[in-house]
Amino acid sequence: MKQLKIDFFERDTVQVAKELLGKIMEVNFAGEKLSGMIVETEAYLGKNDPGSHSFRGKTKRNATMFGPAGISYIYQIYGIYFCYNVTTDYKDIPAAVLIRALEPLTGIETMKKNRGRNELRDLCSGPAKLVQAMGITKEMDGTSAIDGPVKFYEDLHQLTFQIIQTTRIGLSQGKELKLRFYIKNNPFISRK
Image (cartoon, rainbow, N blue to C red; front, side):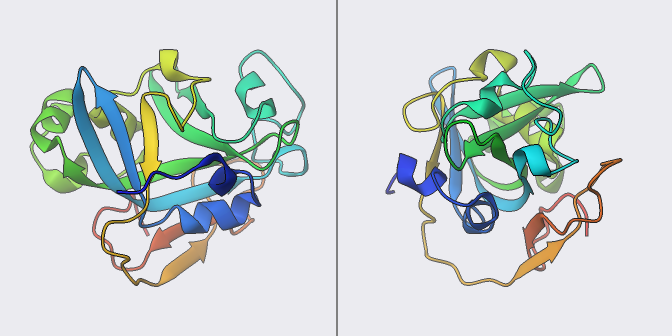
């Protein structure tokens, strides 16, 4: 598999969010490679996007978003769960793509243990679920998506699929923006 390079992420965030669909996300978890095909993403456009963490400026929590592209941005929600994003665009443009769902490919038994679930469809069908299944931790925040524990690769079979574009999930502001993308009819998305 050909690994994605930094120039893939140093582009328009919406374009990256769309083109990550069908790509492979891989995590090195305790020496084992866990991977899944990305089937759902959301774009967060920075200072002009009221749904983005960076909308109100730089803070300790969102500082990773203000760095260069191709960096893992991991944050906590509801005080217990974590979500994984990869930064996009260029330094000082605080944009990122949230990986919302994966179709599990390798390391499935470990994912089941990490999630405490046996149903394949339930392992990575949501941003917090996939973080738990893949063994992603807050300590990975700020690491490179090029040479860190989380990496991205070209899709294996150059699949053809239709992309659905719709509104993002779980936001109080910016919820009307159609910045969520998913593979039509894929059973592993979080929800329609």
